[in-house]
Amino acid sequence: MNKKFSKLSGIVTLCLLAVLAGVGTYAYYATTKNGTLNATSLSWSFKAGASADKVDTKDFIITIPDAQPGSNGVIPIALSAAGSGVDVEYTIDISMITNPNTALNFKKENASGDAVTLGTGALTGTLTKDTSDTINLYWEWPYGETADNSMAGKNITFKFTITGKQKNPA
Image (cartoon, rainbow, N blue to C red; front, side, top):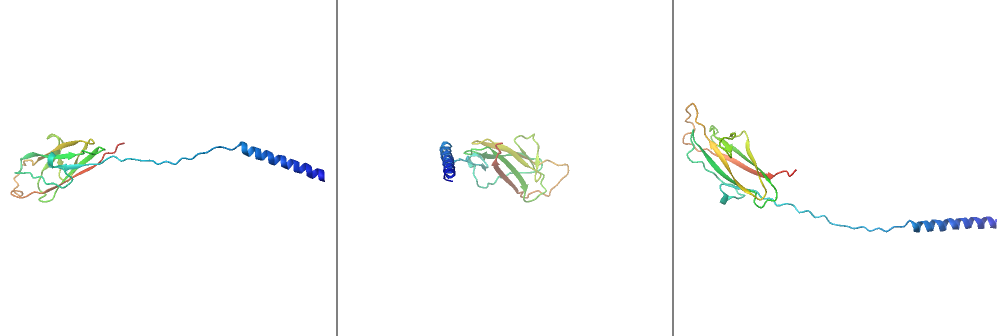
């Protein structure tokens, strides 16, 4: 029995030595690094005003003098994306607050463009980043076929909203 035990313990010892030698052979080196990802967002700026020297983020008032059927004119609206790192899509929306019988039409940029009737649409465009532009808003009160004295001598108030939003860079 001693011989059997001695043989068995020898085999077990050899196996243990082989396993220990194998573990040392399959070792490896490893390094882990941690880092930080920084992102810098682009700047944003959009302003509008009644003239280039009055461009601001505040509300403003535009007056149309001597409006009457058959008259027309131009309203300059200054828009600015100066200091903006992104292009700006703008929308000019016009609605009437008082005396909704007036048939004023508004057009953007050229007098022969499509008219936007109050309450039916908005005038849109794009400003390139870090630029300014003056948009000419043309108005016209068409001369009609029938007499209508209902607006004579009355104040007409319009609300316009100018909205600028970042243009999708995609």
